[in-house]
Image (cartoon, rainbow, N blue to C red; front, side):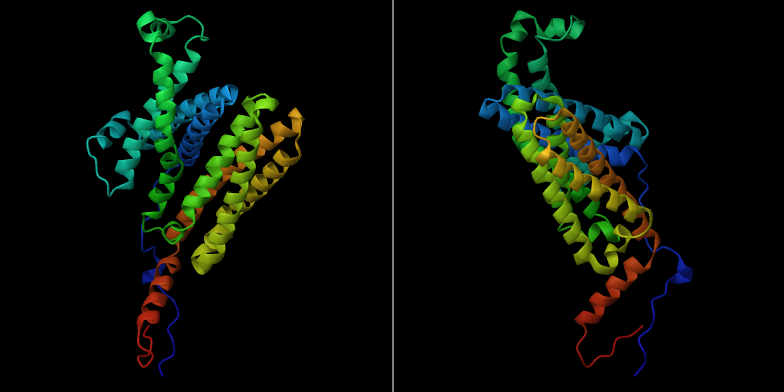
Length: 323
């Protein structure tokens, strides 16, 4: 029998190209997109429940997150017209194309929802003058509520489509994690939106935000642990090196923030610490994911070894495995 060949690559060179996304633009965009999507859904739920104060906080959070996220995406692209050019194509099989359209629609809806709530209280300006014009003011509240309800559709997609964007690549650490990434992103986005609601809403009206933050922290932590365990060899970048340090820090911040949200009670100090820890944990998760993707693309073993194992698993038992 010929002994099983050890792994090797062509002069040790990477087989696939490393992701060209930059820091901090792309990780912050991933965070803000999830924050905006879940906050908009929270706004709709709070509006239905009659919690107008939390609904206001969530509306503004969703609008600011979408606007800032679009800004970071444009910064990543380098020129604003590149984002507009992506809207020239509507391709359902392309996560990037669908994500561009989703971001454009969601941003418009969240902006309308926030404008309807803030128009009467903002200081005088040309924009508020338009919002307070009789013809506009008479229809703006209804239009804002309709926009909030429409984000029930766009919000969950905003929270998770970036997971599809990562998984639909050849980067091993992302592609092989396609089962867990949507849950990881959804949990992280829920924790982020809950943290924003806790920080910007009076304690008496913030109970749903605290519950969302705790639930999001649990989902994110469990999804991350399951992902790293299931991936085996391909999951090494999530545990080693720079990416490993970021993911461990993210897990510690997320777990700590979730526990603080449970025990904070009426303490504004503990509530503030909880919100800050959850926000920092969500950001560290995005930075860790990007770094893990780079590490798995740079080392060819994460591409070759899983492919060889799949080929060997498909061979009949009588056929010896080749090099």
